[in-house]
Image (cartoon, rainbow, N blue to C red):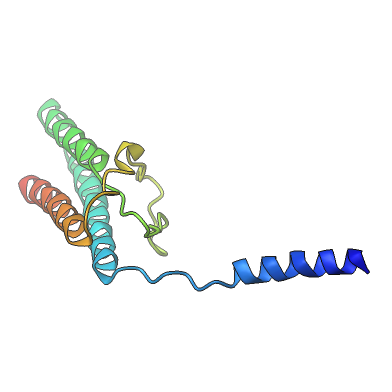
Length: 139
């Protein structure tokens, strides 16, 4: 009998802790994640633009130009600040990104921990504007 009571308690505790409702995510953080995702996709488009430039012209001048901008894009990627409490989908849907590097520096992973959702959104807007400026400079 004691064995069944112990098993019942274990099962009850497991069910009780597993069925707790997850706290809802702040809508501002969800918006910040959308901004971040847009920035990531712009970064992937910039990668494609740079690759196309080298594909069309392999002169030393073009290669220097592309390498300079690829370095800036790499620095931009390293500056990405993760959004606490919100999972980011690194698959980016059904798009084919076979030759793009989506790794980012996880050194900034906890940078936003003490920020308000509004501040986190502003950081993501600034980060996205940086890649938009890079994109506009290489077109």
